[in-house]
Image (cartoon, rainbow, N blue to C red):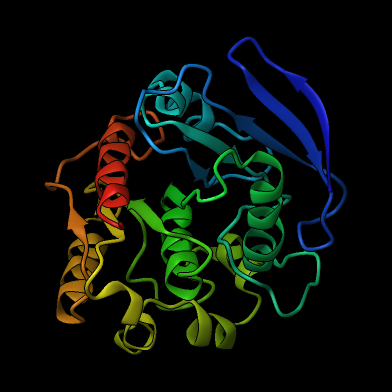
Length: 262
């Protein structure tokens, strides 16, 4: 459930969202609706996936970056940004019922958004993220193609091979290595198992050539080898942050992929 709190000067609404799957106590949910949407552009939902716990902005502010780009109006998007008690990798931790972030995103947040924020009833759900929310976005899309329509994922650890490769940050989300290997690691077998909805329809954009250059080129090759349709931004070095310039490229790609879904 969500309880409205306030609206800031930029039109961003804040809610207290309470979910048994999403940590201890209420977490802030931010929502930005289009005020002056571009004519003739279908209304869709964009889930901005944070990379830090709470309202952390060490790597920039996703919602602020999107608002500064006027994404909500240019692309007629209602932007939704959840927050989390720990650094989110968008996984279900089998050892902690309060850390079921995949379940929260797919079974709680997405249905709440549709029920409370839809205007047409035919909105697509787009995902945008980088780093841990880049690999998280790929997992969410590949595992839940009927919930999420598109994903733009930038500069993320696609070659990650163990649940604790990033210390307690990743270990706390995945819980066990067996869970990571079976349900989240981006292996050829995982992609083969989930690729059917993605072979003839381009639903994936990847980019980023900063912190994870090898990972991104490897993942691009893996998607190609698996016959998964995707678009790849020209390899360009930009800072590993929300506000370094990649978000407008991702938005343009999402819009193009969205139009092509019909």
